[in-house]
Length: 250
Image (tube, rainbow, N blue to C red; front, side, top):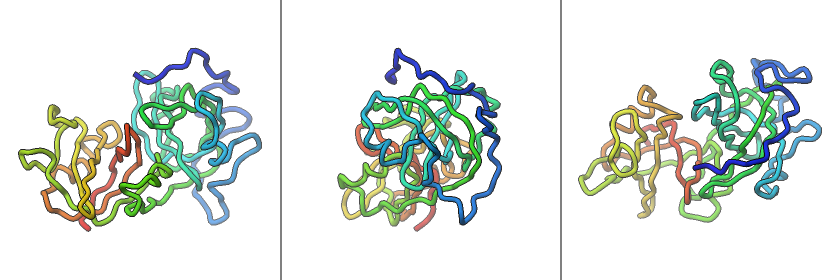
């Protein structure tokens, strides 16, 4: 179970899509002049966030890149700016607010920096929407696979190029429902790919990209030996556990 803090962050504004201090719904299109790394007064740069100690309060600005899940009035989001990424875990919001929070939306988040099984995240968070819109391009980290450098890209939108599909278990299947094959349609998909003789396990996380998505269907069509290019979010669980959002023939 995720670590829950006994001391909650004192919210500076009501948790709403309107926000406070003039925050408004984001619908703007990014422009060449917009700097996704720029910060408002009192907001951490990514470097400052990265250097902050665990279990301390943080204030960040970032842009929604993917919505992993919503349940019990809490949302889990992948967000990013021009320098790095922030995984927001179970941030309080209504389902209607969640549906309106589209990819690219700029948000200001206050919460606590936390860690769970290697994954760095922000918990007990509140947010407000700000003006701005930014969609990050996937960063090619193929050459970082199997190195200590890969963790520097944790939670970012990343790409892996020229991977070869390997069998997922001794049966020769190209994918499994759940990590051990115990699942069924609609559950997470696990599949193995290799590069330069080394094999890596990747996941299609069903909360993020469920059975009705193109990537879920694409993984089910994979065959051992296929060459593929992959994109997704570099989630971390006891090591790299990429949540794949795109699979295309290499």
